Image 1 (cartoon, rainbow, N blue to C red):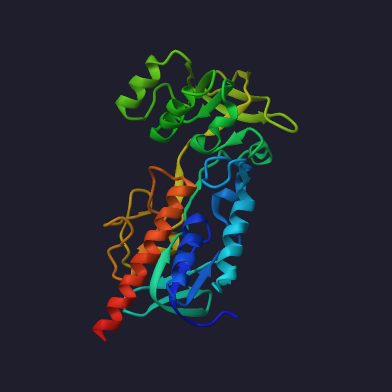
Image 2: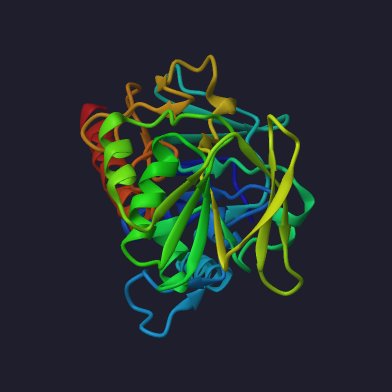
Length: 312
């Protein structure tokens, strides 16, 4: 049964949030995870996960998240599958709101992650996990020695491109402009690679394929002419949006497009408030690094609460 007062409240239930909950409850802290109405984070959209330690044969993303949640639940972590609407961190007692319901805690861990930006076309959603992806380091190995496309022209896209070029047969970059927006050093590396091609002034109109991706249909934005590019994998790399809208006006420092600013790895500018995972990490964005940050956030929360006891 969900109570109203906790030592630690964790907002988010991806690898960062669930790992934080396991470490917090094992530190004998009363722990609540407010998991969201669609729990599990981005791994719920991932099929085969082969880069998470401990699963030599790979594991399905949703299954990995379910195992993490089961482990936390067995340790008596409380769960609430609702969305947080606002938080109040102005005093020592932190308040977390789900609509009109108020929950209190001594330490707050924010692990709401970041959502990949998608193109928003119908065929895209149908083929996610079947050739369409938003994470090259997660899924690129499945397309070893195969032809793939990458959509985008910023830093995110070029990093994906350079990673894929090491393992794929050929990488075709599809960009809606006639020049890239990425850092010059990334552009130079991409332009000198022998297996990277560029298609300029073009947008993806449709992902083609029934059971899996077969090709992408593109349109030249200047001429209106359409064409198809055969490929087995296509990576949408137009950036991510951190899930921090509910933190606006709280005093918790954000930067860039809304990532939480941290110091000493997981500490925010507000005492007793910690961040873990993709909600602050816009560089690595891996399940294993998110889990690591969740561990650190829980340990920092435990230290913070212990210090509160001594202060009292």
